Length: 66
Image 1 (cartoon, rainbow, N blue to C red):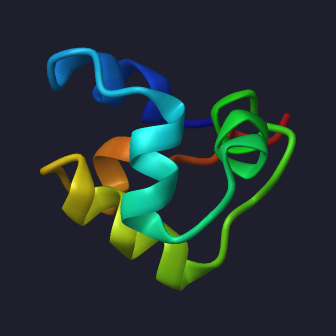
Image 2: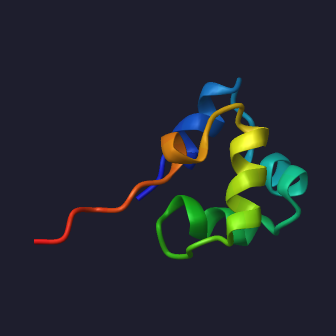
């Protein structure tokens, strides 16, 4: 699970394309990350946290297993 989209929108409506360029991925990859259909690398997670002015643990977390 992640809060990438929520964090992106809180930064003044940054677009997926703008964020993707900052992080070095495609807009399509950013769409997949935001919709929990792609797990980014640690490097991309770090770059996202930096670009979104937050920490990795605020952006990403694991669902508890039942």
